[in-house]
Length: 460
Image 1 (spheres, rainbow, N blue to C red):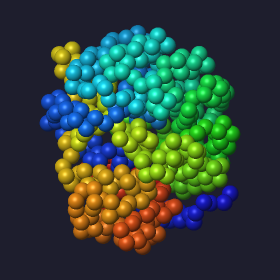
Image 2 (image 1 turned 60 degrees about the vertical axis):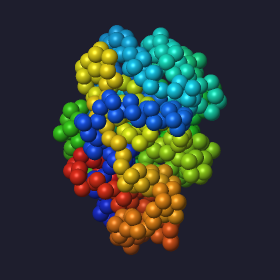
Image 3 (image 1 turned 135 degrees about the vertical axis):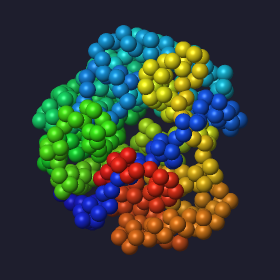
Image 4 (image 1 turned 90 degrees about the vertical axis):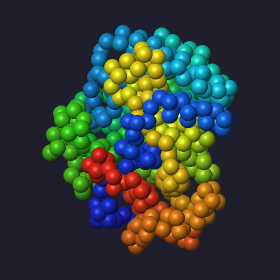
């Protein structure tokens, strides 16, 4: 198997430290409990003045069973009735938000995540869509990006037909691994036929983009077993494939305590799995967007990257760069104007705030001028795999090389190690540097030393 670039396992191991995924900058560990409802409302008012399109994220926290690798904010229950009061609370949150949002702004993007959104019944899905449309006015544009995360064990062809009728045009299916031994080890038995049947039906129905989620580093995985999974996934030909790095943090995530550390692939084997993944997917024609995302060259993510309009947020990479993100539901995070605001992470606290007619904002942060410069630089690196210092100078009215001198100095070691090229005002990640793009971004993070390393996952 030919590698798409020169592989240096020793160098990757040396840089395999803990670091942020930079779904936001500053990261959630910089959010303050002093940031509350009024600060969020002020940000909403400022955002109305700019009139950017909206992106709505709805968090559905329920799952019917626990996957042992999971680190999501979730509630495990087989009682479908728990969704009814939750949908009512979501509607209450929308009602409280609506007076503060200009509803003429197009909802260009919608994403349902979890948990497992397919936990909802078809009627409950319809009810939630109707409430979202009534409060915000959903878009009929063919350019809209309306996505939902699906557990293939809980959906069938009728589910997909219903979702299409509701306006969804993009699906993300959780697969993780197709090897039966690995599936048993992570408590997620999911025969290949379930995924294939949904992909075939989604393709027939004309869903615009299909994503499959995989995870490497799971118990009992080997480079050969994961290559077999990749071969099957490539044959299914989804438009996008996400291959996440499993972060084993049993001290933080109770479900992971069911995974025996001795069953996890060792550092050498895990790097071999990563090497196999990059080689097989790029060899099959997928573009390595960055980090753990791969896409066909004609997919909107790859097109946005070529145009320089790719964005990174809490749902991963996005082709809708100019949207304000409004998060709804327990633990959901909003990115509005120059603030991040997170809802309560405990369901009881979320419910209590809404029952008292308050938005459930628990914490957040308003970005300083320095934060905005560094967020811009980090996002450009994470999305474009390169950075233009002249563009930063023009955008913020600064002398970027002087302002970011400390970051450039920190990049020098990475440059000598062949992870980044610095050509005048341009900073470009090398092919190997793309795998360590989080490390490159960390050079621009002025808040990193304030957060303990073990709060973050390992980079590779």
